[in-house]
Length: 154
Image (tube, rainbow, N blue to C red; front, side, top):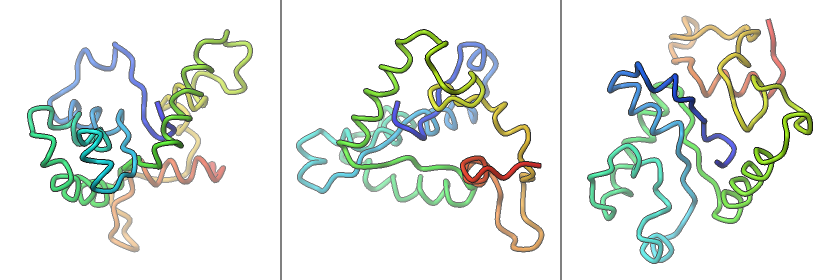
């Protein structure tokens, strides 16, 4: 559960389409940066996003497909979550530790706490999704997350 990896409820899974399944696999996973030696030694575990999206693909193909996944993320303004192994490990540990304590000790509400990342946290943003008429660039989740982090509201 590194920062940037989304969490989903069972209710969200009940009616998801195949396209939404792929999106959930991508948004709910996070990679860690690794060189060729570390990737080999870890069995390509550094490519969790690609592994979750394409579970039947041989792991030696993850690096190749990651280029295409990143291009899709850029095209649709979606986050591609990655970081160093120590950072990703620490964030996972910290998220699990915070989820283990009673709610009254958490600073955020269920809608804006990084541990839950509800879509409701975006309700007051002024960003409009779709294609920006001025630039022609797509505005999606990555833009919303940047605006939310920057405190830009309606």
